[in-house]
Length: 496
Ligand code: SF4
Image (cartoon, rainbow, N blue to C red):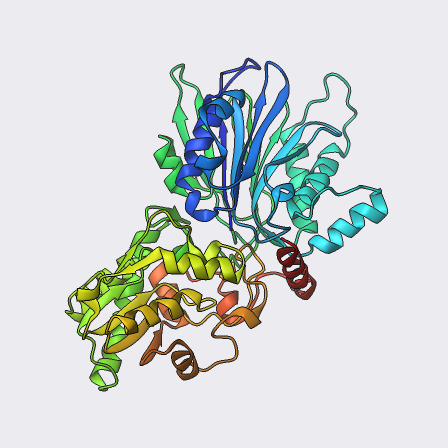
């Protein structure tokens, strides 16, 4: 998973300082929770006809300072905050990426292309291209540039029409298998955005009027970034839609592909997105409250059956806090914070590598002894993926004297891999893979584990069409390339 942002201020070829890049920088700060491996911004300056790019490993604030932002001149910019789920973890694979041939094209994306290996091979054997990275974005740039060139002459008056862009996007949808939300800058032309036909990865649009009555636009992974920058949230980019905003701020859109079944990722509501965001018209915070209420119903049944006797409800901070508050209210139990989060340590789930994740968890959560000792704790968490965080937390709670621990999870067990931009491509890494709920409880050393079921999850989010492949094993796209994808990611991660 990653965060993407694109900003375009209306212009007529003249430079506008680094205002667009500054918006992109601030937007990336609001999207930092979506990826902490690396960050980058690419701007296009209509006056100099140049792309300018700054990117590096680390958090947004580590990568950028005022001096770097000032260099990113021009009226349009795209930015990316990286959580490596494709390619390696090093500098070579950081986004944005660009090409100057056959014209200037820069791109960022959030997601994964499952048939990357096949497409990369084709580029190399059929078109004699030399790929410089192991990142699927580079392959996407090659294909999109080629598709945009179809039928063009390069005569002086041969500018791109929206029809060119629509046709190129249709071809992208035909060749790419996976989940992706893409933002691209075309030199001298404008900004393009499209979202995969199933809508697996999110993308929203915001707009604000400029002082001279024209329109400035911001597209981002989450509404939190758009709102923070002062753009009014307009809507989500529809699955299978392409949008083009020209250099004067005129927006063109077309529904290029219309799939019957949509599949936005359920994990955005459960864990990944900021609680302040709204995705596909469903506010994340409201969904998390409802997840807590439904979990309370399941827990009440276990209490009534005499299986557990909780006397306090405790969240694993921060994502599960709204669910824990709602569950405590519904059960009439006190809500207590027995674990305090160190805000300066990265989210453990999105660090790559088990060793990094383990030390992050140890630093991340500090116990409040008085709220733990002698208590029967109903511990609410959003999910158990690898089980790293859960095991560490439970051993902390045991160490500080918890009597009974019930672990209640706001989604069903993760038993299958994700190939669409969340980094668990191998089901063998998942703590629930091949285990019953009782075996999971035993592995994690808790008295009981309570999971929501699929229908609870759908109802709480408020959408009937969702990607739940990591729960159900039913994938919304073809998966014949899944094994190769999974092995490639493992090899690259091992190589660092
Ligand atoms: S497999 Fe799971 S995590 Fe991956 S996109 Fe689907 S719902 Fe989201």
